[in-house]
Image 1 (cartoon, rainbow, N blue to C red):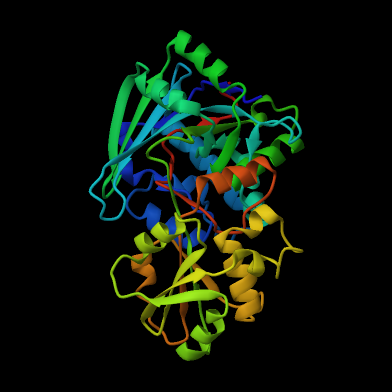
Image 2: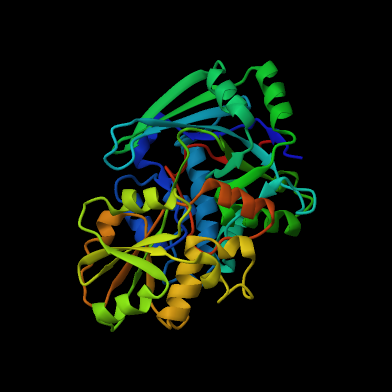
Length: 420
C-alpha cells in the first residue's frame, strides 16, 4: 500500500530574506563547492543544514552533523524557521521552458508524507543505483536532526490523466510564488480540506510509485527506520508525487566525456563503423536530432572528437547486446547507456574501469571542451516506459541514466519526525 498523510511543515519566515536565496537544488557531491556557493548569498540557505561544514579542528567526522542539529534549533528559536500549526498536503507547480523552445510547460506535484514499507510489501519502486557513501551521509544527518530538509520525487500511475486533472482542480489556500532561476516559476499552495484529504488518501492507496529523484534519501530513510524501529516518525519521508502522464514531465540525459584518450579521428571512426552508421553533423541542435532518431526506436549517440561532431546509429542492437548479455539483464541491456558503457567503452575502446569519464547535464557547458584527447558522447533523452518497465521488474539502471527537470529544491518544505 502507498499510505500518504498531510504534515506539519517547517517553513522559512519572510524575515529570512529572498526565498530563492534560501533554497537549493539538492546535490550529494561535491559537498564543499556546493555549500560555499549556495551559502554565499544568504547565511540561512538550507545548504548550511543539508551540507554541514567539516572543520579542521573537529575531533570526529560526525561533529558536522551535530552542528546541523544545533543550527536548526537556533533558526527555529530565532523565528527564521517556523512550524505550520495545521497539517496540510501541498500542491507544487513548476512553470518552465526547455532550452530555446517557445512552449511554456507546467509540472504539478502533490507533496505529502509517505510511509515507507519493507520491500516485499512496498509499492515504491527504485530505478537507479545507489552508493553507500552518500546513503551514510544522509543517514548521519537524519540521526543528528531527525529532520527531512528535502522531498523526494516519485511518479504515479495515472490512466487517462485523472489524477493530474483532479489535483490541478482542487481548491487551495495561501498561494506562494517565487522565481528560482531563469524561466522557472514555482507556486506552492496548501490543501487542508478534510474531504480532499480523505480522497487523496484513497486515490493513492493502491498506486505504484516510481522513485524519479531521491534514491539515496529514500534508502537512508529505510536504513534509519531499521536502526530505530521504535521511533514512530522514522518511517515517513516527504514526497512530491507527479503523474506519469503530466505534460510537464521531462527527462533529460546525462552526457559523457572520456578524457585522456589518445586516438585519431580516422581510427575512432573505423572502430565504430563496424557496428554503427556514421554521419557528420553540421547543424546546431545535436540534442534535438538524436532525440528525433531515438523516437524511431533506434540506439543513437552524438559524438564530438577534435571539435567535429558526428551522429552514430547502431546497426544491429541484438548483435551488440550479445557481447554483454551475460553480465546484465535483457531489459537493461537495451538501454543506450548500457550500450555506451558495456559495448563502446568496454569492448570497442577498451577503457579500464578507472578511466576518467565525466558526466554533464548541460550541453553548452560540455561544448566548451575541445581538447584533442577528449571524446564526447551526447545521449538521447531516456524513455519513460523503459524506466517504469525496469522499476516494476525490480531492475536497476546504470549510474547517471536519468535527470528529471526541473529539480525540486531543498528547503521549500521541511519536516521533523516529532510532528506527526
